[in-house]
Structure formats: structure tokens, C-alpha cells
Amino acid sequence: MQPRLSVIGTGYLGATHAACMAELGFEVIGLDVDPAKVDLLRTGTVPFYEPGLDDVLARNIEAGRLRFTTSWQEVGEFADVHFICVGTPQAAGAQRADMTQVFGSVTSLAPHLRPDALVVGKSTVPVGTAAEIAALLTKTAADGVEVAWNPEFLREGFAVQDTLHPDRLVVGVRSQAAEDRLREVYAPVIAEGVPFLVTDFPTAELVKVAANSFLATKISFINAMAEVCEAAGADVTQLATAIGYDPRIGSRFLAAGLGFGGGCLPKDIRAFMARAGELGADEAVAFLREVDQINLRRRAHTVDLALEVLGGDFHGRRITVLGASFKPDSDDVRDSPSLDVAVAMSNAGADVVVHDPKGLENAARVYPNMTYVPDLSEALAGAELVVLGTEWSEYRELDPASLGEVVAQRHVIDARNALDPQLWRNAGWSYRALGRPTA
Image (tube, rainbow, N blue to C red; front, side, top):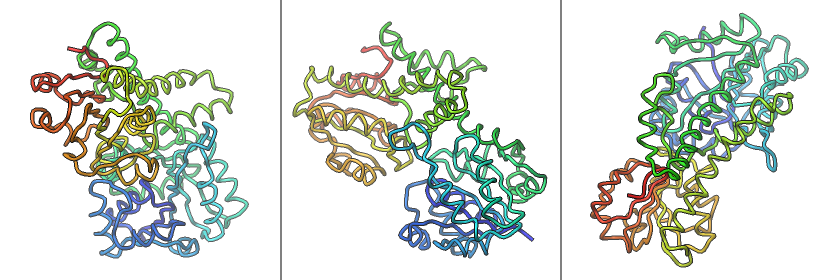
């Protein structure tokens, strides 16, 4: 008999995982402690923007394979395998991860688990968490309940694809029974030839943070080279192309610009450093402090560049920032580099207008005093400087000649190196970018 699944937490990870596992043919129940979110999901509405997820969600609710609840008892009675998909944000005033939601979920679920249940962690956690959860369930749940760890590798904007067609599956287990159960759950994916890697608990927990740390390092490396290129008059985009041809390096994540943000990379590398320190291995990841600092310097440098373009004074100058979300095809504004730049310039006296195709509502919740304009033409009207902070496709496709008739002054800062410099300069714009010559 096919296992029935529960997904605890219905944020970016949980809602996507629940809908996609139903799409693979499983009966799935999703749980969240927020009744409003559950009510929304029951109607087939995703409470955030993720391309393609609305269709998958609605289709599987209609088919009767997917439902949502706030009842721990209902989840415990229904499911055989329980996926923990709650958030692990950065703790307030510290670099470590806040594990309140993870342990709170396990504690709430434990009394309702059947003896044959398997609890599978997918949240990104400090190494050692799975063993702690296993020990907790030994004391609070029925005999026979097992734990496994199955890290997620989702990219916002591609989450449905990454769930249904991942590049690898990693499971940390302590028994053959747990491995067999997860092979059964992921059988449709494994059948496509996706690698299925079986490890111990700590290795599985480390895979996600190690991968994120490597990606963050690669991004910060090319941004460090951008700093050198600016000092030397070189072009970091040409440099990245040249070194990217080396098969040992590759071209992915070598796009110099404003740097990384979002709810994963920044907080994950900081939590990794904190946990390594607790384990006495802080020197091994000391380089990540500079990775983090390089990334943050890109934001400050963009503000400095804007100040230079405007002649050294922000006061009363109208600036349009294109992008509030931390990346295109997402409405997630957590630790958004573009939004940070907008806020910094506003705090320095500029009259800043922010546009984004999907992220304005979330941005307004975080920074309610900023000016957000949903119409692109209106947002650009009268601008003395345009800053491209998030590389949405509609920004890449802007016509600089037409745009020049709308703005007050033709100054653009391409903080993502996403525009064609010659095209914009030929249209009469002063074009500046991070890590590229001024002309």
C-alpha cells in the first residue's frame, strides 16, 4: 500500500513539497499553525509567488490527493511519513539558526504519531539536529517511530521543477527500514535516474549548508574580482566569461553584481559559522566571514556609486529602483540587496520610488514608509537616476530610447550587469555598472 504523507509547515518549501508529492500520485495532508494560510491553501491559492505552483496546487486539491489542516491529531492519524518543512530563520541578535519552529513542530506532532511513523526533516538545520530530534521522539512518541533527514535544494522561481525533477536526493538514515520507506516515497523520481545518496545524519544535514556556502563563496569571489576590476579599469563580465570556460571552474554563479540575498544563503552561511564555532571548528569556516562581508560591501558600493552619479548629494533627488525581490521570478524580499540599496538611499535623503513585478506588497510590509509604484512607466517618470537592482526579464527588455523620454535625466546604474552597455550609451544614457569600465 502506498504511504500517505504529511507536510508540516506550508511556506515556500512546505507548500511546494506538499503539492508536488501529490502531483507524483501520493495522498498528502499539509499542516500549518496559521489558520488564515490554511484557509487560503484550501481554496487552491498559493500565499506567495512561485511560478507554476498555483496550477499544481489547484489540480491536486481538485483530484482529492491534497488537503490542508491545523489539526496535529488529524495529521498523526492520517500519514505514515511526516516531512518537517518549517522555517529556521536567523535568531534575533545572533548568527545561529532559530530552531523554535522545528522543535515546536516535533513536540506537537509526537503524541499523535503511530508506532510505524517516519519523521523526515527537510528544513535547513545545524548539524546534530536530527540526532536531537531522534532522542526527543524516543521520550515523547510511540515506540518504533524513526527519524530521517532529507535536505531540500530548491531554488525560488524553480521550486516545482526542482521538487519533481531534482538533481539529487540525499537521505540521512539510521536503519534499512527508513531507507526503504524513502525509496518508496521517491520511487517516481528515482525511476527518472535521479541519484539517491544514502548517508548518516550529520552528513545529510551538512550537505545543504556546504552547498550554499560554496555557492556564496563563488558569488563573492567574482564580486571581489569586480572590486579589483574597477580599480584596474578592467571588465569583470569579460573576466568571468574567460575563467568560466575552465571546466574546473564553470560559468554558473559567476555573474558579478549586487550579490546574493534571500531567506537561504545569507542566514545559512551565518548559522553554519555559528555551529562550526560550537563544534570547535570555527577556523575551518573563517573564510565565510569575508564571503559575507564582500557580499554586503556590494550594497554599500552601489549606494556610493549612485551618490557619485548624482554629484555627491542625494537630498531631494528622484531615484527609481527597479526590483524589490531578492531575485527575479519571486516575491520574496527577505534580505533583498536591491531593497537594502533603496532604503539606504532613501535614508540619505533621496526621493526613492521602488518598482517590482511581484514583490511590492511584501516590501511594503517590511518598509512601509518607502514609496512603491506598481506601474512601471509611472515609477520611472521624472527619475534622475535609474538603478537596476533585480534582473527581472522585463527590465532587461526595456528600450532605453523610449525610456529616455520618460525620465528627467538619463543616468542608469546596472547593479546586476544585465543590460547592454552600448545600447544604453547609444541612446544617450550615462551607464555605470559594478566591476566594469565607465566607458
